[in-house]
Structure formats: structure tokens, C-alpha cells
Length: 164
Image (cartoon, one colour):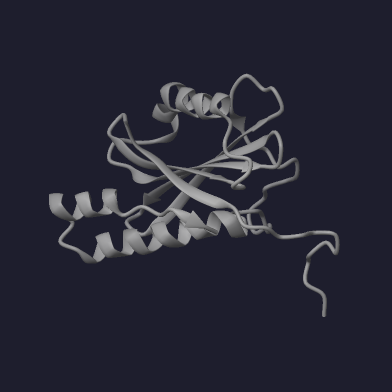
């Protein structure tokens, strides 16, 4: 039985790095960079991420939202900006943006095929899931807490860094 893995694919580790807590429009988002150790997120792209928060966060995020953003370097010049928000108490909602080559800004990601209901579609890759798993556990701890100011502070401080 063959898994859906290209025989030429060679897996390698990447590093997740917590960068900042971004508070914008009443939303609180943990920002992570994800990249190969020898090819970190380029500074110009990190600045474009900051620009995305300034220009688009208010249209994507709502007051009171809590979540995390993964700025993922995928190869030499392709980046995903994965905006993940806890809504409905225990549901993870996501907006996907991207930058390729010398695009002047991040744009909403369109995978190029129909996204009809019931169609299998991409979510997170194996590297991103390392951060998602940590954030899922952190949010579960918050949900099981009194959800007071101290518990929210513990959630804010509960970040992930390491090899995935």
C-alpha cells in the first residue's frame, strides 16, 4: 500500500519560533515564524507580515478574538501567512494568505480549484501541525480554567518554540 508521498520527497526539520504577541482591534494573536534553520523568514517578509496586521487584520479578526498566526517559509520565496482564530468556544477557524516571489504584499490564498462543500481541501502541513498541536493544548487548558485574567495571562505566555 502506498501513501500519497512523492518518492523524490525528502523530509527535513523546521524550527518554530515565537516572535510576538500582536494585539490589534481587540484581538490577541501569538505570532510564530516557521522555517528551516538555515533559511529563516526574510526580514522584508517579516515587515510585510507587520504590514498585513496594519492593513488587513481588522477585516479578518474580530474584537475579542484569540489565536495565533504562523508565518511559514516554504522554500526559497514562497510564504504562507496562516491566521488561526479560536471561535465558537472550541473551534479553530483559519484564513490563509500567501506571498510568492517579489509580491509587494500578502494576498488571500486561492488554491486554484473548486472549494465546494464536502470537497477535501488542504489545512495544515506536518510542520505547522507542531504549532497547532501546542496551541490546541494551550487553548484546552484555558477552556478548563476559570477563564479569568490570570488564566488568560497564562494562555498568552504559553508559547511554543522548537524543532518540528
